[in-house]
Length: 426
View 1: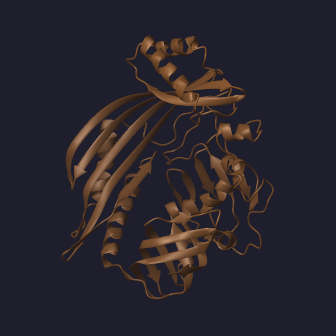
View 2: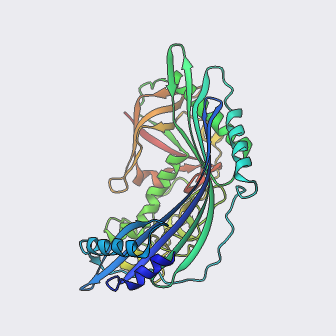
View 3: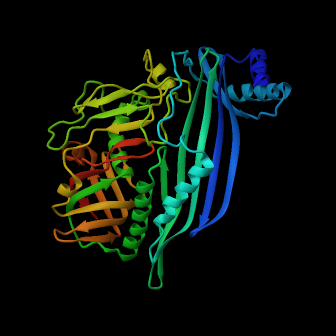
């Protein structure tokens, strides 16, 4: 956008700038029950500009939106307004990233192989194939299939472009039992389409609605092994990973330094964690972050020992890191050697839906109210509800058992299940 670049060049008070261009092309499908109600296509352009001003060794910033139709004079007025706004935000000086060698890699996954109009029909068919239960149904389903072209440019000479593909699905499974109806919310995201796997995931969501309609109050128990799965497994490991972020260290909230043992007196599985720019199926995959830093894999925990720190360029700059990692999006955790079937041979509670699970690295607390779980008493698995779990992260890090089974989520690739022994129940 020539008018924007010209306006920035003429703004002598601006010490540095960054522009994030994005174009999102989407095909969307909306169902009510099994019927397609709406289909549409969109093409949205977004231009976000951040300007920086310097004074007395400090740097202030302001971010604003520029629209493609704007003329240079209108953009210049916006810049002047935001120079004034930036004068109220001075912080310790930080530089912007400089150019690095970068080859725009092909997006991982198979969403590029079929035209969107055809592909979204296949996705919808896979979802509706699961919608076959007599007492259960999908009351509403929304599918968003997107291609996003991104370009990041800054005043230090960074100019990088990437393309990503993704599908986001929002659906409401419900189940009718007698006069009562239970509704759950289910969100699915992926960058690689597998029709059978999608059908199975939606079927499982419907069966969870059935289980919720049948759930009983949990019998009194003091403590029991607890199994966390999917998003909560990610949050469990993520609570330890965040100990090694630049921001945590800069704010003096970290409990570990590089070289420290995260696990001590370990009796469970070994913790191995790496951050990767891209994993097939993970919709948050990207090879360049929002600051224009070219992203590379970072091994952060190896054999239970902290190996590296990570985080955005600015916080890394404050810590004196020569080459900050940038915001590497996917947390990859090594799987365990125990299958979920082996884990489930003894009594346990598998927590499926929390009202709001907490993983507090400062206090060491994890837990929360469980809206839907499954209690195995040694003979049968029973859907249960209305209880709270309370565990200790400082203890769990040495005792957890990770499953052989893996899952890929938006920002996580790792064990689908994590078993933590002796968790208290309230």
